[in-house]
Figure 1 (cartoon, rainbow, N blue to C red):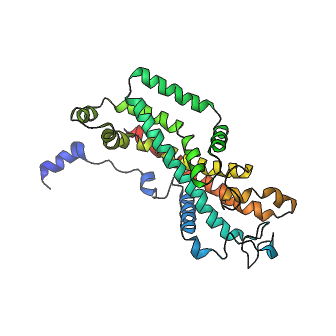
Figure 2: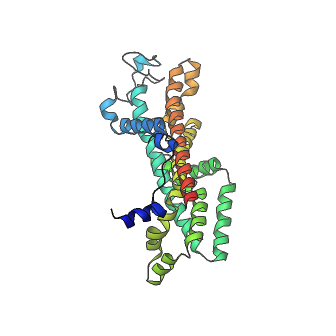
Figure 3: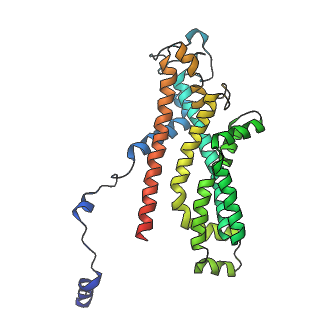
Amino acid sequence: MTEKTQLFQFAGERPAEKTEAEKKKKWYQDRPVAAELFLSLLVLGCLFCGQIMTKDPSYMDLKNCSVMPCREFLFGTDTMGRDIFSMIWYGGRISLAIGLLSTLISTVIAVLFGAVSGCAPAWLDALLMRLTEIFLSVPNLLLVIFLLAAAGKSNVITISAVIGMTSWTSIAKVVRTEVRQIRNSEYVIASRCMGGSFFYILWHHLAPNFFSSIMFMVVMNIRSAIAAESTLSFMGIGLPLEVISWGSMLSLSEKALMTKAWWIILIPGVFLIVTLLSFTSIGNYLRKQANRKQRNL
């Protein structure tokens, strides 16, 4: 290194010394490590549930109805004699699948709707936003019940589609706000002048700018979809009993309370609550990261 370079770095380009707090800060600080670890183990258990299930989750062993947790039945059995330990992992696969599929549907609708509204003229933007506010004014659960009744028989696909089509409004408003801020940027105008299509501009120029802003809302939508499915099944209008999910397992709570079989309610309820809390923790962490990034910009 030459003397001139040393003087230049000393004058203005020398990096600032890290504070003592930054030096001591570990990679896992401020991160929801427990939530990430739990969800990782849960996803792995649901994906490979065939290797860890002790019994067939759909088999009704009428000789062992409402058996307390023991060595043979680790989490006990329900009122129909099904092994709760196997049902937890198999049902978790269904609940997570509904959460992910419905969130994918709602995110696609929100991004397209918000981007069109953000790029549209003022009169069309106002019309689309009024439509969004109408959706927001209707209670979400009431709208889901109405659409399920119109769809007929409930299954994983119909429930995912209905939840996805009713949970896109909040993300769409954020996307619309972000798009309106960057739609007149030089690189967007240049891409438009060079013949770039709407979807090309959306994918290459608009989405990278608002993706971090909606990421935490996407995670929270997964949580909300799992909770919505559980609520619908608990009310008896969701998945049928033969389709095992955490919600359909909780639908047996009335019979469990009558027979004092606490494990039928407690164990699926604990898995559901901890899963929702884990998604909430990760969503809050992503929101803080997005806010910190915007402040730095």
